[in-house]
Image: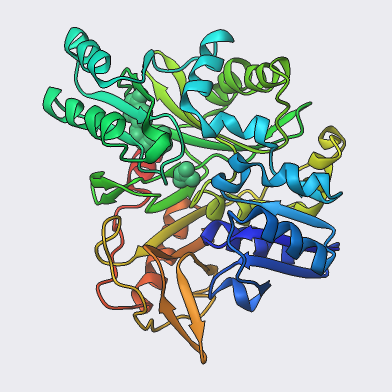
Length: 426
Ligand code: AMP
Ligand code: GLY
């Protein structure tokens, strides 16, 4: 089989490496890919959001399957366009990708079908939003842009001033364009966060190994929100009891709700959860694999990923048995100094061996370029240094040992990835 993966970050590198293990895959392509991916898949320069370009590329390469990994092409309807040309795909149709594409949609879905989530109100004019904030007078307040905003559309305002500013810049200042012309203001929840990615074909939902992201830029969960500075799996807060509660109250009801709305979801549905004192609640849905969650989840998969993708497409997921390794995995992201704000590109990297020069490590590339046998930084999040181990501590020790051997000017990484999880285990 010939498979084309759309996207070019650490998540896509992890998908490519797992597909490379498949007995059924002979040839891997990726667009646009990155420096690390280019050594395992032939890369092209068609952008991940270029629907016509990707359809034309799939035809030219006569691939058997296209995996659409990032949120924006899914929300724009790339899978629909590929299906219309007869391609087998992995990823939801546009109608179903709206579960991530519009927070207003997902909040209304949860309200209608009694799926636990934070209480909220929706606003399209700043005066009413501000009046509501003043009336509630409860901080922190959570303000979210309705549409996609490169993971930056959520503001946790600590006081009225911050909240008013966020509302004004989103609605009036069009901070995220049309994506922020409507905002959701919701109740602030507390508790450990749990990411659960799942495979679903619309009939059954099969959760993958749970994980935990570390979204803030600095140690101790300080600093700005980022795309994710590191992950661990499994998540110790996802106990058997929590898993059962999630399946009954969240996972199955969501699949049923999407079917009832005529929006069958096929692909990877990501549940962003918080274990609050009043039970597990949904913080957000994503219509795709998480990044950097995928980098710690897929290394633990002990089944053929191509078989799973095919079964999802054919709505036959119930027929296959998905196995997981009984190990732990950790991913420490090395980012460019300055990320998530401005940062330089094109810095030469050293110590860039795929195996991180440490047994049990693999270095997933997020923003790198490969030229004349050398790697250069080419993005905010540059690499995800990933390791598996019998215990979380062992995995983390390996990730950090490998991080020590890699360098580029002003490299920034968190030194406390997994600390909260370790404290919960011990
Ligand atoms: P999102 O981009 O939707 O994943 O949100 C980014 C982060 O904001 C989440 O991972 C949470 O840490 C935080 N967050 C979002 N919604 C809430 C909420 N209602 N209460 C507390 N924290 C939240
Ligand atoms: N790591 C969070 C996300 O992929 O949205």
